[in-house]
Length: 135
Image (cartoon, rainbow, N blue to C red):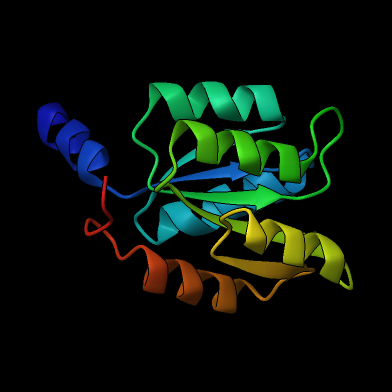
């Protein structure tokens, strides 16, 4: 039975949440695990890039305001390493300049914090249906 569980987890769509706020990471991890996704989390850019290089991540939910390496820098590095990786960015309400720059650099969409969880789940499911995301 353990092999079946491990195989199912390996097939599950992998979402990585990159946010310096532990509460946001835990919330999104809990929400998306309930939806059947496999979740990886990172609190900073270096950690996020290591995870991306070592795992078959399908979608990244990336906060734009992270100390050390900005979300925009992380996005650019992600796109250098894995140009086809789907990235959705999260910003504080009203940060339209950052959103425009992120979209120009390969982000597919954005969400304003505080976000509507149902809307976020729906958007993730639309962009990366369970077990159907390109790897």
